[in-house]
Length: 257
Image 1: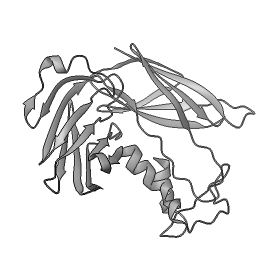
Image 2: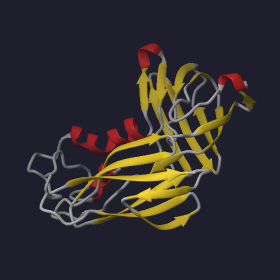
Image 3: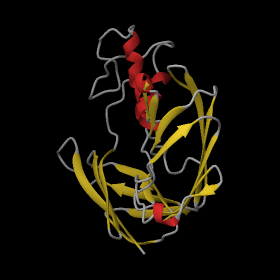
Image 4: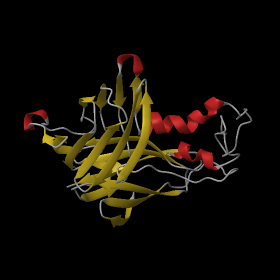
């Protein structure tokens, strides 16, 4: 997510190819190169949208990984070969709906694998209004929604779910010349009723993290302090103690009911 904000700085119309690791400054490499745009475009196309076309096989893979607190996304003109389609997502409590709308009537195959928060339990899937048999759903959890579709005309996918948990992206707004002091999320894991994160931060700094928790309640937490709640979103403060190291690691944990 932080890479997407690089376009806000320096000259319009191009992006710096290489940034200094210690300070938010260009490293002197020529920025006037078309592939420098990859720093922003690749996280969007391959990361958030998860679009992987295969024109010779007339297939595509769509693996959208939108942050758990996004309630609406609309994307137009995903193109490959003679195909072009739009993707829309709407999410409210307990339900996420996806629409796939092709511009042409050329049939193509689509592997649709939307990323869901860890621990998500899917209770119902409808394809164009028709529910999948219960035996085809089972106990689907985290990222196991894998549908192989033949797209020819509009497609609607309704997913009912509960129990997911996800940390929200940590983003910063550095100004050119500022020293690096941000937080890194190195790893997340859900084991039973415990959701843990391995973090890396600068000693002496405090960071605010937000979590999306659906249909469950936190019963305890370690190495961070709860500072607020708004619906399914919980805010925590994580403090890294003073020290001599440039960066240190710290594990935080949420216990769920």
